[in-house]
Image (cartoon, rainbow, N blue to C red; front, top):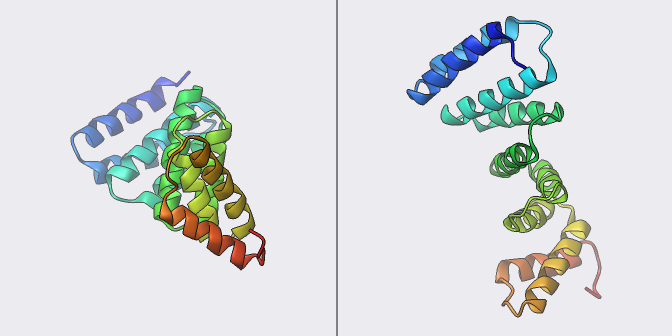
Length: 173
């Protein structure tokens, strides 16, 4: 449950954000941050909203930190948590924090996420992070999946796979 003294500023922040006043909404978080003894559900709700407002303000880095903090509470439904992981993986990828993007894409998939584009995002992120062996293993799985489904593999994945093998000195790949 969320306390009324926290609920009022959260609602005000939502209204300001809805009215496209993200900068003002961000200013109200200092009132929330001044409150002590927030329970995990309050932290989850606050950080999720903070991320939304930061995204609206065009500030992806602090939005990613807020999403991470919300996910650390282990609160929310599975679909809510999956949506946060999707957004966090994409934010990390756009910020060129590729190792983190790969980690969140992997967590999304292992938690049951159904958007298979995140398997490709994970592979690309591993490759761009210089983690060539795990990238090659995942790209090989994606290639096999394409072949099994009689789909034509995309050229970028094939190039990343070949380059990954070469970079971790696996000439047999």
